[in-house]
Length: 296
Image (tube, rainbow, N blue to C red):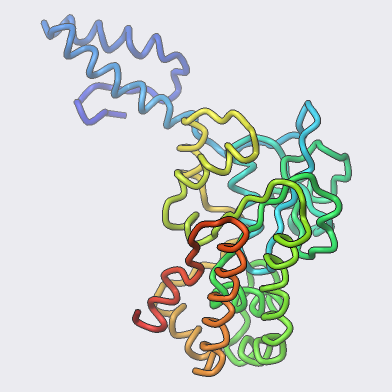
């Protein structure tokens, strides 16, 4: 491989020191100055770090960790967030459920029941709050969250049902889903007595590195900056439906009529109010989706 400065670079060589020595010899042979060598060495260091960025084989924690729930409405990005946490820390995540599909594709400790050995535990119901010492409440804008949940109900983690099937599922589920969506922050904030961290899916998408840094602080896990940057590069998980923005907006307008869109906007404002009252700061839960739908 040739770097941007024109120096040969062998990715199979695992010693950064040898990279620097080889580059220094090359520069000396060409009569170049030491400060140029320093610049080139910094370039090879960056490329060396890049070659070390790979998907982790996660394991259980060697020490007992606080029991931390990753609580969310279904369709809010819980699986993707677990992937990010595992990649960032190297520690497995688990669930109060036991999904064999997840266990076989990237979440080997999905069904693990050893307390304090996984870094977070997935849950979707406030009845599970009593299990935990800390809570990460994952919140996504309701337009996308409810659509994703309706899609999952008919297609599982990755399949995309036809439009009519999704519309029918959404119509059947929307009232219960709206109550469920707002009950999670409402009951968590009013009944849980441990630390609560609000993780917004839409902010993760917008500024992943910054949000991962803050999440690592809440988890009280020391994560090298290189591991966070690697997680950003390898952010794509095994259970992500792909769609472009135009198709997604068209689907939202097909699934939700004007009345339902207003219901979703109302639930977003009510949820913001609950969080603002508890945390004494401002929240916006509409995401880019609300701007795209309403134009303001």
